[in-house]
Amino acid sequence: MSSAPTAASAAPDTVLVVDFGAQYAQLIARRVREARVYSEIVPGTTPVDEILAKNPAAIILSGGPSSVYEPGAPTMDPALFEAGVPVFGMCYGFQLMAQTLGGQVDNTGAREYGRTQLHVSRSGSTLYEGTPDEQPVWMSHGDACSAAPEGFEVTASTDVVPVAAFENDEKKLYGVQYHPEVMHSTFGQQILEHFLYRGAGIRPTWTTGNVIDEQVASIREMVGNKRAICGLSGGVDSAVAAALVQKAIGKQLTCVYVDHGLMRKGETEQVEKDFVAATGVELKVVDAEERFLNALKGVSDPEEKRKIIGREFIRVFEQAQAEIVAEAPGDQPVEFLVQGTLYPDVVESGGGTGTANIKSHHNVGGLPEDLEFKLIEPLRQLFKDEVRMVGQELGLPEEIVQRQPFPGPGLGIRIVGEVTKERLDLLREADAIAREELTAAGQDSQIWQCPVVLLADVRSVGVQGDGRTYGHPIVLRPVSSEDAMTADWSRLPYEVLEKISTRITNEVRDVNRVVLDVTSKPPGTIEWE
Ligand code: XMP
Image (tube, rainbow, N blue to C red):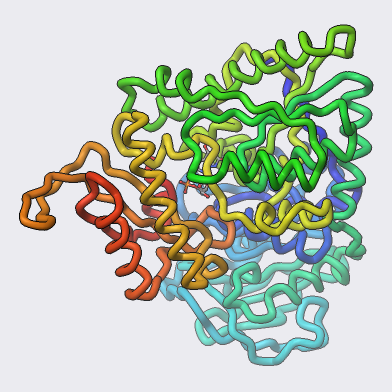
């Protein structure tokens, strides 16, 4: 890869979230941003001098699955607490802080999971000012802190743990045993804001409007008078990335829409019409269906499919680049490729936290080694809801900004088995029916997304009319989620499921069963591949 600079630069007041367990850290980072303070995640294994070298305005130690007593559990260099940087420990981070600073953490066996009542013992404290003396909080721990370190004041307890929160205003060190970042901790956001504004003295100035201004300036500087291309997938991320780059460099950007034949029904038309109408962007449509289908011939392994699709994407872009240059000889070269990579993609691909690679997201892990473009990834530090806000501010149509997520590799990873044109057509029909019925039933805002999956390698016996059938099952995978890191299956009304099932089995050839996926994430992922 020639180089992969990111267009984004850290804001001056950055809060670093030290990650001892990926899901918690991401949620905390989002909550900090909701408090209008910029935040980034660093792995729990980052040496303290490296953390401090980033000059953070404050540090948050996240929760995590370990016990401070476990051999090999993450530890913390005491130097972190002596640097004068405000620190807030949560759950595991709290216990680590207690133990490192000389407090007492006991393996009491008194486990506390779920909703618990917190008794605040000093309501005028930095963290609890203006919140009730009794408040519900979300607990998840086995160990308990029985004595705070010297110099700390205990400001809350529960029936099970004597020290559920402690504060040291002089050293600007704070900690809570529970998870203030989860919804069930009713005053959690307020307590986090108290830490940020009162404890750490940070002013809430970060907004998605700042992101647009910063990105526009940095993209202009990076691109200069060169040109860029952007792949549009029809999804929110690439649309917002393209609109942002277009705002920065106007006609120096050409968008390329690769019709890889793995799109859902009507999606190509949406890009060709709505997006162009809203932005006035230059659009080149490449018909690459045959190429993708040939490359995918005989391939059933999900990771291999993802890698092939990612690779072919880039190849088609390179070809499009050559064509764009050839069509306008004498112009500046096309040196940059815009990608709508988001922060969770970066984290899940192992780039943010050093956590395990779960799937190769086609826009991060699947890039070939010999990529000939420099990347512009203006959304690399943003969460999905923030991307939608940026899109709204840029004036993109609601249908694009509020679209449910759709994976870059498209229907290619929703066919379990080999991908063929015939199977894609069949899945497109089933998917269109499910989408139509969900919209008609007013379910779009209730669910995060609803993958419709074809089990192409499975057949089952059915009966239709007077004849025996031997068709494929279609899986409905409606999920509710806040960020796709975790998800629950959506409890759709039976009548809606019935309607979808009846229509799919009646209208889609070769499908004789519709089944519902009732698995949360974890253990399942949202997509089947
Ligand atoms: P999983 O299946 O990992 O999906 O639980 C989490 C979210 O990511 C989407 N997804 C992708 N998006 N490129 C993308 O742009 C990909 O390769 C990809 N794989 C999964 C998925 O639809 C869900 O919203």
